[in-house]
Image (cartoon, rainbow, N blue to C red; front, side):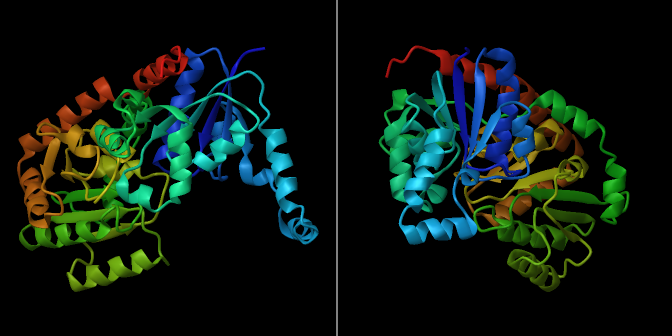
Length: 385
């Protein structure tokens, strides 16, 4: 019987951390002679894709629900029943490693370890703001149970060390994308049709941001930047991809579009699995996040040959962008960000060169097969900490 590795994902949504784990699993299968199990903290749309590469256990599905749970609660045995269910499901044999993807899985990992003792490796993608929004007890469990931390960026490494994790227990393993697969997807995109759908004229340019519309991601800052750039560059359009009609952020952004007089030039695109087509159609990609460990969309924009503009001291992206792959501007400085975007838009050769540099950097240092190989080596090293 082959040994197992149990991977823990907090959810199965089409968001950065679960997609990153899925991509890594696809490549680890080719590099490790282990059976894989994935435990999901929450179900979601990419569960079927996890099922293609591993046995999948969805934690909420193990628990009593509805009228049955109500009956057990009245009898005073609900907690005992649920514990027996997850302990039976988690009683995996011959587990070598529990690989937890994010710092917020401490409680779920504890449940797995109650019946399945194995060393824990935690791949951390969170920074201070997000960490502080979770129950400190859950974070503390993660810190106590983990023997090795993988940090998704140097910013995450610094964060872990600030939380009193010994530096020798932290290895930087950056976020990554499967470059060849992404390149194929990008090559198949008809950018002319995307620009036509957004009603861009041939000579007009497009600035794109992709992400959940919220305070941390900085959709409000992107809007302010757009308003400044638009004053002097009437041929530029802007698109935020990831804000759906009916949400409060859609309402807020629609209000600002009207008051900044950006109707017809600022496009609100709902959450979509086809976000790559907007990146491919852009002239410049902007990451206006106040805090972002190292989002995959930055690497995807780089793979598309787009220069990236971001804030300093806002996560892992500034280290990637540097001076060669786009522009890093002072934290929260909208005027500086507007100026950087405007300069790139007006200078074709600089824009093309920085986009080409970004693509080369991704291919060399942030390609999932190479990153997965490093993770495989770290998972199979003898324990020395």
